Length: 136
Image (spheres, rainbow, N blue to C red):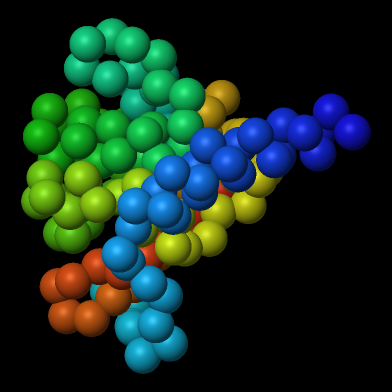
């Protein structure tokens, strides 16, 4: 029961507000734009003000900001061209709300010290959604 409630809270926090605000929709004609693999380390769990991040999309966004803007990279992090643009990193919340992330994956990301694989879907250079998977 506790896990079910936690999953519901996480889902509401990740998908609720973003889904209401998002104009991004999942379209079957969209194609895989790019994929990357990244390690979510301790630097990725805190924003530039030192505040602890509590939602998976915030942490993934911080990971990409650390990689591209601040050059703080975990060993084995892969680059990507899509999130090299700050404007695309800003779209991450809505893209994740339109995509897929398992409850367990979200929980692991919030705890940190986990490998993730991110698949970015869209058309051309326009991203529409991301699918996030935790890897071993």
